[in-house]
Each structure stands twice: as structure tokens, then as C-alpha cells.
Length: 169
Image (cartoon, rainbow, N blue to C red):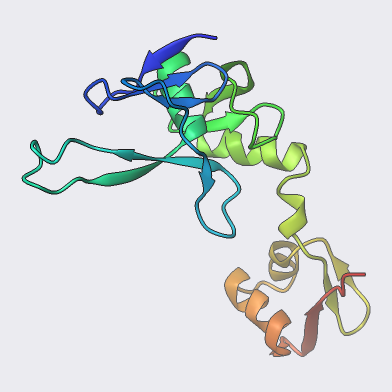
């Protein structure tokens, strides 16, 4: 396992190529937490500066572990802004499982690996016509996507038809 210092923390923390973060002075591995109920990516809480340096105030910041690993171990020659988990497992933060991607590449990867499909719901028109998504239904009706989504949720009439989301079993 290889350890590297995390930029911006004055040599206080290190990250490993296996996705661990530790206090560089004590060697203690930091506990990884989850940032809220909908975010599934582990974070660590780091202290940015000492009380002496910051005028009696320590500033604590949250950082995504996968991003720390990528910044330390994966070259980003093309300046891509996002980090993708190659195996689609957000708990596998090993450097060999991460890559720098554009937002479009990240979305494409999620769709190809079934991660984005969970949020897509079929839309049913009152005459039984099915659409794979709100976007597809909106295009077919020449209607705004966000308004079509609201119509599905609230039962509004769109161009003479009622739309709803397919009921999940």
C-alpha cells in the first residue's frame, strides 16, 4: 500500500492507493462517513489548519474519499472534472478502480451499468400508450419535460390526455 500527502492540509493527512485516509502525524486511520441519506459516497472530515494558524478557530471540511485518491494517484492530463468508479461500486475507492471523466462520460457509464436506470420511470398515457421516460413522453407531445413530469405526478391534462407514472411492483 502506498501513501501520499493530501494537498492543502500542511502535511497533516495522507491517502492510500487503496482508499484509506490517515492522520500523518499519528498514523490513525480516519473513520469514513456518509454525507447525508441520499449520498452513497464515503467522506472524511479533515481539519484545515491548527488553532494557532486560524486565530483560535479550526475549520473542518468534508472531502470525498474517491476524489482524494484520484487527486493523489491518477494523472488528470485532460483536466476532466469528475471521478468515476469503474466497477460502479462507490465503496471501492482503490486507485485502480477510479478514472477521471467528463460529466457526460460519467452519466454514460452510469446508464451503461444500470445505475441511472433506477430513477427512470415509464410514463403511461390514458389511452395505454407507454413511454420509456418523461423525456420521451414530452417529446412525443411537444411539451416541456419538467411540466410533463409535474403532470404525471399531479394528474394534469396535457394536450387532451392524462399521464401517469407506471406503478412499481
